[in-house]
Image (cartoon, rainbow over the protein chains, first blue to last red):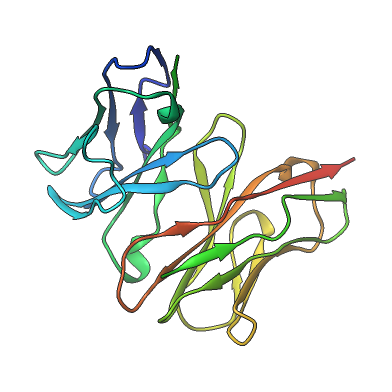
Length: 116
Length: 114
């Protein structure tokens, strides 16, 4: 079974530029998550989708971050414009469903972003 | 509000010795608890979870964890550590009663020396 795919693996941009990350979840997984992991910290949830609807985006900085999952499969996370403090690893995860034994999250390899 | 604490930044053990990684949590409802491991330049890998049932949970790679409600703890254990267990370990919790958001601890770096 293929795992969660993410691209690119690494990205270096200058502040005020824009950047986009792509995620393809495990086939059949209805729930998709985007996390931000700053060096030395645990992952922090940015946004959570159930199919193509948003379940939780309370920690997404909506003035600069946006995410979509238009067809309920793959997803894109965008930052525009980027700030220095956005330097982090952006992790995508997916689970079969929300709740109960189906909610174990499986993570992709992440995209490491450096903002100069 | 929910939170997780991993009181030790680093744990060092000799190969073959028991390994324990500590985790305490705070939720207002029923806790759903998870352990993940992260190797360098890799995503998080699921080890085990507790949702309900037996307090002792067995997971991947010989790891187990014990849910202790009175102490609000969910410590990860392995009876005999391997050098290959050296990695970054994360505990995570969500409130099973009223939220789907998963909160992670800051992580514990485990080093197993040969």
